[in-house]
Image 1 (cartoon, rainbow, N blue to C red):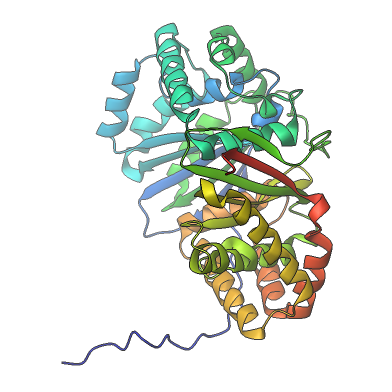
Image 2 (spheres, helix red, strand yellow; image 1 turned 135 degrees about the vertical axis):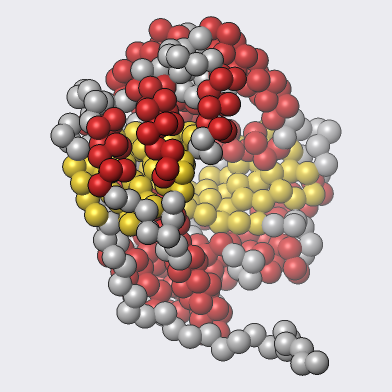
Amino acid sequence: MAFLDRSTPPAPYPVTDITLTAPRRHVLPNGIPLFVIDNPSLDLIHLTVEVGAGALHESQKHVLSFAYLLLKESSPKHNATEMDGLLDFYGATCSVSVTLESIKIKITFPKKNVADILPSIFEFLSTPHYREENLALYKSRRVKDLEYNSQKTNVRCSQLAKNALFGNEMAAGQFSTRENLMAVTIPQMEQSHRETFCAENIRMFATGNFDTELENCISQLFEQIPHGKRAAEIHDLTLFEGVSSPVFEQMPDSVQSSIMICRTGPGYCDEQRRPLTILSTLTGGYFSSRLMQRLREKDGFTYGVYSDLTYFGNQSLFSISSDVNVQHTQAAIDACFEELDRLCREPIPDEEVEMVKHYIEGSLLRRVENSVSYLKQYNDWQSYGLDEREFQRMLQQVNDITAEELMDLAKIFFEHNKFTQIIVGNIL
């Protein structure tokens, strides 16, 4: 019996000349664009309704997120239990996520059931009837989550980073408290929904086995969304103003410390974004990254360390984060900066650059490997005014970039005095 030789990896092949098909674009009578990726073999329809308002648009902490996260419980005709039963009966799901800049409502339903379930979903999306008992229950859960998470160093570290980034003047930068959770009222939620759920703020993305009947059903419902005022664009923010490094919060009984090293960076549409994505991946964006090899494999400080870029408006946040044993807190921070310095001083081996190129190429392919993943990726591109051609642009950047160019970018971007340190836990 022959066995596969798993000790030697297969030879990699370069990824070139892949052209993605643009989704069909249909504009509803009220101006809402609907982008459709046709997939005749997919009878489970995936529909995303994106509302162009997020945590950065909140004037009062939690009001906008409550208004959307409680939609499914707020059907005008069904209570929460009945709505859950109706969704289950027709094989449908509806989930909501709130990001800094937008709200994404993801709906799935079997094509054959569109006329039975989609009108009911549209009712609670467009004309929610918020109930005091649902709001009280949700507040209770959130308060308990707050109490539980207050003891978790990684959650607190993320909260401190947002506070340092956006400050107390913006709701997105304020800490969640029992007081501001309990302060949210139904009239505030209703007003927030009215102001944001309008045709000017909405884009729709769908994939599946579309035909004229299905498309007409979706159009006839969502063309009823009224016109309103587009949410304000998020322009350059004054970030990390007055923040001295490091920001440290003591948790004396903690056995680990959560650390974050972060700085602001270019926006998604900036030409520097693509090479910086490659540099971030090489630094800490995958299992064979510099930071993983140093902090996990060599020093044994942590199970994982990661670097990432988060985009909002015309800016981004580059962050390196990890959970480490308390006795290694300062050593882990020092090791991170040492690795950043090495990338600035020492030539990056060609084989390391090739490895990260292959990893990114594989990641790019996975994002468009089927119509559902492509739908999500296209939605992300559209959020920044880009389209399917961004795939080829990123692929070309990956193929063309050199070790010297990555080193030159590191010298510019990895200056120590540009970083803010966030530490929660203990320094022994």
